[in-house]
Length: 499
Image 1 (cartoon, rainbow, N blue to C red):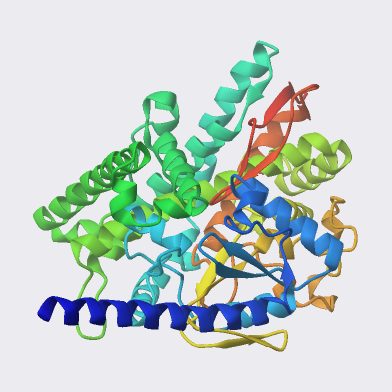
Image 2 (tube, rainbow, N blue to C red):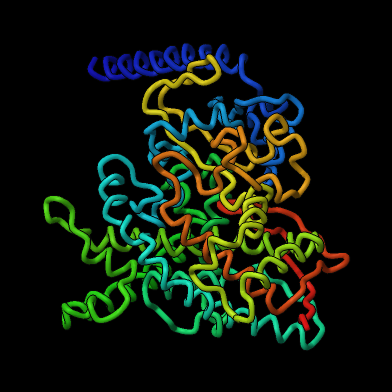
């Protein structure tokens, strides 16, 4: 009798869930019928059958908006679950101006797959914790802190250029994406952690860049493989085990730096006043209004976040900037001519020069429009949200496809043409400010955007002071977006020393 009751309860519960899902599914069908689909729907695999990786996802989104001029699109994952995305300033601003968090807790939430690695830092945290940490960390990017970093940018660039010089002297082409990644990691370590251990000189023997690239690749692979969403399933796979090993390794790298600094400050509390104050100093000594500081786990999360975001996204922007200089020789000479005029007879850029590089600023902005360093961000709806007259239900993630906004034909009619002049006089343009946001926008914009933009200027200025660059005939230059915009086959260039 008891067994029959239990069976009956299970059956009733199961039927109630089926009925509940049926009602939801019917509503989702009705809602998505009013929204532009990404393409032809497979009856089981949804729209995931259209692409194997994020390159296929972005191509599908860009093709859809080119064909339909949509501002809002939808897709279906397997198991009949819809997803949503926005690709126009009118719809992007609704998400970016909201207080909705990143999708880090939902089963398919894309940021959830970065959480074991990056932890609860500024990129992934939300609510009061994000607000507190943002407030505590903002002083790390004050102009007075950023000013002395310019010399570090120059020092790092000098090492980078010496590597290029060897290729130039031997009259060989060189792939620059990995070299740029090592340089931007070197910059981040020196500026934020006062860590100067010859990262660029070590080259391939320094594993951090490869580990970060592999972690992002594994995260993207998991995002487009729904049956690997459950943690216990993923942990059983070779990818899951590799992800755990790489995560432990990058954590160990950060922990060693943090523990060394904390020990030094314990031995000499006045040490912080004897030298340049860096990001790690601020993390260790920061206190909120209640006098409470960050825990060791919170400090590591912020260090991991800044090492990743601060080197990988900037490396993408600089690499595609070098590609663009090589592809457009006339633009390269315009950037160079402005640089020479500002430098005069000096060899290196200084803090005061950076704001005077008007054409270079226009050029770099166009690079980040054409090749978005961060192609997409997402928000998780905690309540229903009205977009384009339609109410998207709560508990869905919505992609804000920055790369698609940067190429929407209604906003940028000639979006595949490279034209720095688009940004010549932004103050007088009527363009919506949410039509271009390479560092995201709203309250969760990138806290380090001035740091990154200054670093780009110094690196590109140092390069052009010494070399002319050109593309390598026959090499295939192809965007390969994942967490950042990479190059599928690398970015090869030829170098010619300037007289």
